Amino acid sequence: MINSQFPISNFHFKSVILAAGDYPTHSLPLQILANAETIVCCDSAAEKYISASGIPDAIVGDGDSIPAALKEQYADICHFEKEQETNDLSKAVRYLMAQGKRHFAIIGATGKREDHTLGNISLLMEYMRQGAKVHMFTDYGFFIPCNGKSLFIVSVGQQVSIFNFGAKEFKSQGLKYPIYDFTNWWQGTLNEAVSEQVNIEAKGDYLVYLTY
Image (cartoon, one colour):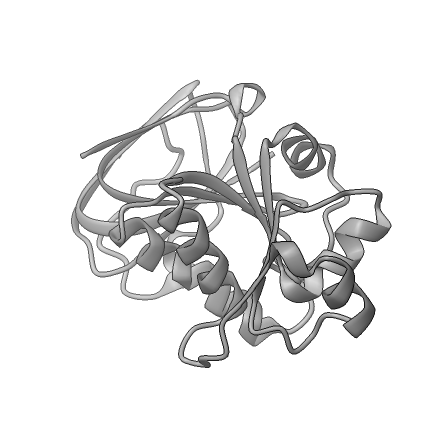
């Protein structure tokens, strides 16, 4: 599997999930949100999106954190599941994938409670394994779940972090520091692109973070 990641300016996602973490302030996630054709809000994110003059295409979650007035007003686009084995973000991913949409962005999934942030980031690996091509955007950069060979078109000096999820035989080209089979998440952080193309190769799954 080869993951090809193009320059930030070329990003376009027809479908976006807005989660209930910190609402985006950076221009890139806001632009992605504005240009999307389908917006799925996790239930407690819907209030912020609507107050920012947005109208979601679907509101998905367990329905326990959306005001009753909004729940009634937007009842025709609410899709609530009471099961608690998965969080609202995973319910939103499941909803999109059931619609045949496998290429999408996640925005607003970080900030606020740190345990929720870590959980949401780690879930990217599960979504990739389920067949989704997904990016998660924050106000500082973006996460991409990867497997095998990956190619990134970047800017010289752009910061790159790699988090290992059991992969072996790491190799890279275009990074300032050599990479290896990391056993702790901190070991792959704070690397830097020294060319406009970064190649990463490994046997297994890993998560890449690129700053804007």
